[in-house]
Image (cartoon, rainbow, N blue to C red; front, side):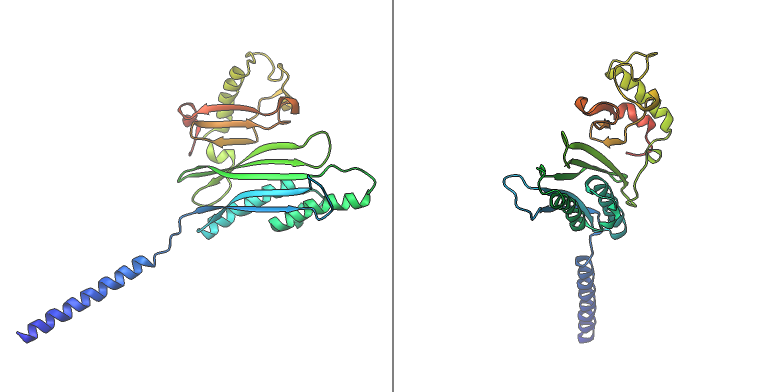
Length: 261
């Protein structure tokens, strides 16, 4: 009887230890789901200024938790911001956001010191990045930006960055459309209908400025909850005064052309 009790106690002890170990392993499981954290970077000139000062303001989503995927996304975002903000001859010298802001402000200060008698309006660079669309297949990050480096007005626009959600690789239109030319032909019909350009008339007959009088997809296409947004920034196909042009194609019509969404 004593022997049986001892065996039973030993079995219960082993089971209990195994359960504790199992629970401990569960507790130590690391979450490797790709996540984004909003980061803010700001810098302004050290030169004397009053209400308005030359400044840079960047709010951007930083990918985290999945090293290879996150690194690919973060590098692409920074590379695009560098193209937008950098003012000078060597944009690739800026290796991080601090360098990028310093180079923009440094360019202003250098000109200010070189021409001290000239009245220079403060420069400005502002970027707001958001994760606008995220599925198991696609991540779409929107960069709303504005830069002013003198002249009659600044330049503003939206950039669409598309990523493969599993690898972090940048997606080109060939990656998301089954047949890019077929989608372009379909989009042209929708575009003509929205902007009242008759079939048979040149695409620029209403004052637009498509290159070579040929319809083209915009440089930026956004995935939204309602459908594909074809977004032409100011200057892309029209004058600055006309600003951007937009065409929303519902998924009920776009799905036939998409490889993923």
